[in-house]
Length: 213
Ligand code: AMP
Image 1 (cartoon, protein in one colour):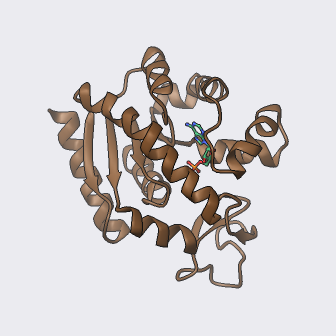
Image 2 (tube, rainbow, N blue to C red; image 1 turned 120 degrees about the vertical axis):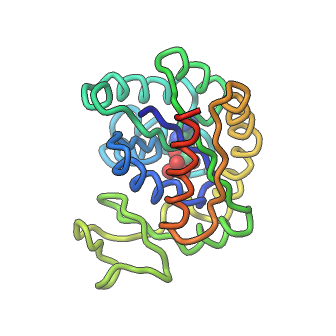
């Protein structure tokens, strides 16, 4: 399965991608997670990406294409397929992606802006493994990750200023990107409101219907 998932910041893409990747046996690639690991390891890509990420801007297309092309060529992806979360985010990224691989379905997880703003302000994330928590659903003990024992923190780019920039970039850059997949008949639109299980059931039904058609 070769899947893309679109959705505003805070729409639940991270949570749903992990569930969907498991359901379809595909490899989950979150470009945000790949970049955060590169920043943490101070790689050349990380050093270049950090200031864009911290201020809520998109990392330049040529950097992103290098990261994604390298990852898609790895044997686990060739064998199991992929679920790309956070890529493509611009029309040139979409065109480049379609030049290197076919895509079976692109899903757009739709959540209204007022809901995502509320979710982002309460979001917390493990700085080590990326597991997502919230102020209302914290780890069992303090701010220590239940999965890996890492420190659970607020993302550096979940500040109000950076969030506003990311939402603006979503409207100006990513919404036209979604239309590319709609024009190709590859888009399934799914309501992202509800419990994680309800949303997952809707996503699986929409993906299965799109693949069968
Ligand atoms: P995310 O975790 O998906 O919200 O991504 C965090 C940040 O990483 C974004 O705000 C961008 O700065 C950067 N980023 C992730 N994916 C991309 C992409 N496809 N194109 C440009 N920048 C990206």
